Image (cartoon, rainbow, N blue to C red; front, top):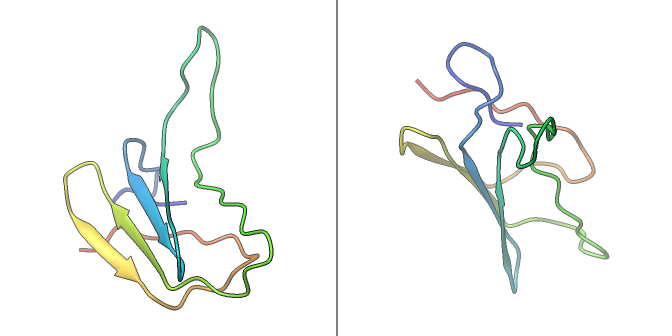
Length: 82
C-alpha cells in the first residue's frame, strides 16, 4: 500500500513486482464504476514463488523508488520517500 506524504493511500501510483521471469503491474485506483470503490492496495498472487526480486513504486508525481528485499505474504505500508 503506497502512501502519500500525508499518509493517505497514493491513488494513481503504479506498483511493479519483478520476479525471476516476469513483471506484474498494479495501478492504485479509487474505483472504476458508478458508486464503486476499490481497496487502494496492490495485491499480487505469487503462486509457488518463494521470493520477489524487486518491487518498484511510481508515485503520481513521477518519483520512483525500488524495494529489493520485501517479505512475501505480508502487508506492507510504503511511506512516501522524501
